[in-house]
Length: 168
Image 1: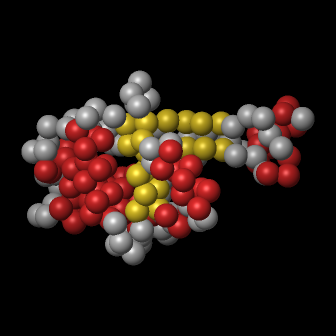
Image 2: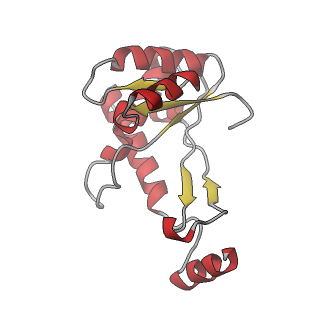
Image 3: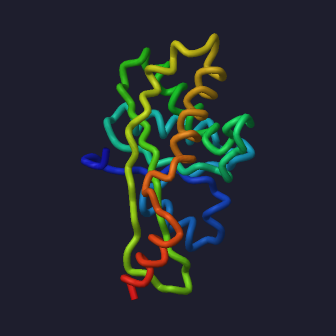
């Protein structure tokens, strides 16, 4: 997934202040306002990134939903992926990789982070799973949400304690 240039799509709420906004622009990040201001422009830029064969990194926007609830944390990224794939008539061959991170507690000042890149979800396959783009995006979001519910790192409380002890 990362053999190409990686472009981040980031909600402006995470980039407060002039310095951070300038840094985001300098780093080539695509920013948008969750309330809709600039969202269409961000969507167009994101689709251009994907059509250009680059990697677009999109972050989940809220905590995971409880079982049976709509997968809201992945709603925006899933919607963007489905729209981009639909507009390209399924020819982007896009892959969505759930990324799992284990970040030890900040007070421990860890030098290591565990990262697991999960199996890809293929938005193109979700184009047939609903009557409209919303249903298709919801199906993709639910699959991403389910992926993130798994303990892919298989960490048990004792394993975490030992991992942190090894870092010290």
